[in-house]
Image 1 (tube, rainbow, N blue to C red):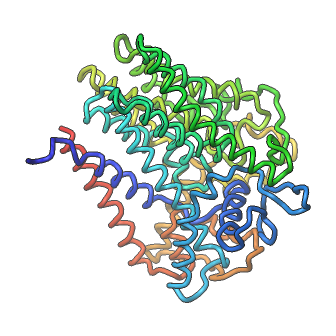
Image 2: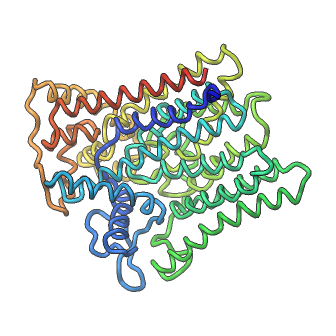
Length: 496
């Protein structure tokens, strides 16, 4: 018997997203967040220790009761990094010679882990949209909107936990929405385990328990015992993450709720997430308007589905908006809200399935959203951000999130045009390639700034490090672009 039409679509959706994100992946970890989680991964593997004793780089650490330095971040991202770190070490041995700093290749492979997580998000959007009643074609449109028209694309390049946290939210929502009564308790337990891992990644994930439990109550019908079993399975498994998080805190800092820093609150984020040139949702993720339009269109979704998909954004907005550090370090747009924003993406499928009159508007919204993400994909914001800060006053640096000229979008747009022109000239031999040291010491924090002239693609970095010829690099890029295109077309055909 032949497989049902569209049965291979999930494979093509994931493969297309993975090829695209691998093509545009960066080649380094330049923020203190990502460098710290990488250092913890390295110590877990090489020293079997959760301390960062002996680690180098710009790390976010605090001393524990034993005097050793410990990461201020959760354990989840570092655990997720382990297979990529091991692959990076194998790659170093296979190359037989150092490239960049001693840890440059492992860092590049670990950064690629964000591309894998982001591709998982795109697949999860397709699965979730189908489970909520969308057609396979509509679900494909929703997946495409999440892949290229949202900040997921730029964050597929960074070592932040953004893509991994988004995958946790989307996967747990898909499991909770299981319509099969015989599987619902098991699915709720699985969703709880996913949230438990998310709790270890970012402890703020605990706030999603409220909207998710509300969804379970609203979809329980008249059978109270069934509702109780689903809630108990979900919360019980999710609570395991809280217990492990508390144990991790005790080991690090001697108290179950100590995380190595004390957050400051001032509520500035409530306005900033709406109007700031550095983090406005409307500026960096206008596709969310189309998602919300589909989700809240009359008779498009039940109240329970709206709670499942929209309420996490509301609670994240309330939590992160209260923080004084609402944007996070070196963020491209509303980083902390991106995972919850992606939960809205099935709304594009619901809008697409309502009729052809709306489809042209959805396509236009996806194209416009993708154009807004391209500057963040082409240029490493952390590098242009450092360049801007060097020429700014101390007061401007303090208030940069409200200065339009310092907006990540503005800085990247300004840098993208000249960067594309320069790199084309280098690759075609019209201009000599800037000299970059092929190797550097482990403590050289300025090494990555030597590549400020380059577009932020790993295969270009290898060219400028003389590890890959121009012809070979372009062949790799063309193969990945071709794979992404072919898989996207196959996904389109199989969802007809």
